[in-house]
Each structure stands twice: as C-alpha cells, then as structure tokens.
Length: 96
Image (cartoon, rainbow, N blue to C red):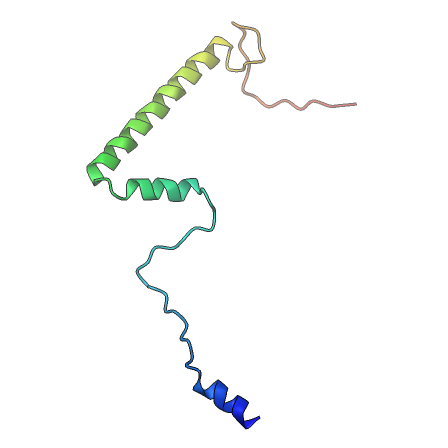
C-alpha cells in the first residue's frame, strides 16, 4: 500500500489548460450561418463591408417596391379580384 502511494506521488500532475482570453468563442453548430458570415467578412476592409451593406439595403428596397406594386394590382390583398378595393378595417365574424 505504501508503494501505491509512492507511485501516485511520483506522477507529475497535469495542469488544466488555461483558456486564451483573446481567443474568439467557438460555435457548436457545424454550419452556423452567422459564424460563416463573420469569418467571411473578417479579412475584408471596412469600406467593402459598407458597400455590401448599402447594396443589400438597395436590393431590399427594390424588392419591396416590386411587392408593393404587385399588391396594388390586386387591391392590397391577393385573394381579392383585380380592381376591387378592400378596407383595412377589422370585422368580427361569428362562426356557428
């Protein structure tokens, strides 16, 4: 029994690794779209990122304009017949 104690005492203890405080956090999701976007944008210059954000904003405004024009064709609601207007007022409908 004394020998077992000596064997335990003679083994050097492994110290737990100290986490790097400046290391970026790691994501546990395999293909996280947010992490992929962040890692893709890291090497880019700030003016390139600003240009991409402005282009994305313009694209969304154009898409909204197309959707608004399309909804006006149908009187604001795709279920109505073309050319009919529908009120934006709420109505209570009693069911059975």
